[in-house]
Amino acid sequence: MTITTPTPAEIVARLREGMKTQNEIADALGVSQPTVSAWIAGRQEMSRPVRILAEKIIAERAGKPRPR
Image 1 (cartoon, rainbow, N blue to C red):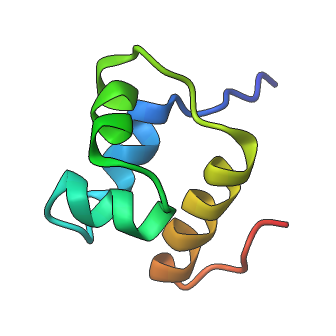
Image 2: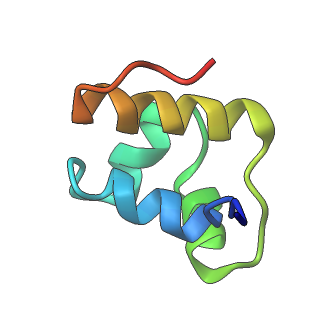
């Protein structure tokens, strides 16, 4: 079985299911809107702490246990 890690763009797409704008996503993750834009465009990787926070937000919205 192959486990794939979602790209930053895929994570942002999941966050956009509950947040309307890049600014909302940026505020929730403590980054700037241009950083969110760079993730979507594939120009920048997401740091591990921000990725963990994003996954926690996604899991909480889905009613799943938080990743650690």
